[in-house]
Image (cartoon, rainbow, N blue to C red):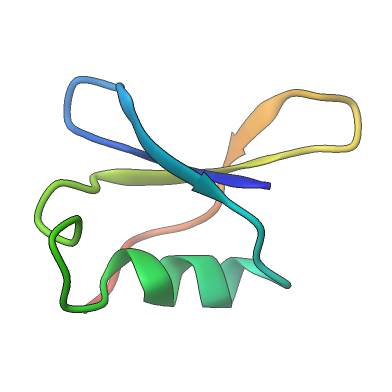
Length: 57
């Protein structure tokens, strides 16, 4: 599970993706959320949220 956060740390969306690359690509795609998403995190098996990587694009 991945979540997409805005500059204030508020969750904009949560979705399933096969890997970090797919989630980061979705976050930077041309749509209504791309300008809002500032951070992408994924849920570890233990339940903690971790940074998925830098947004490029």
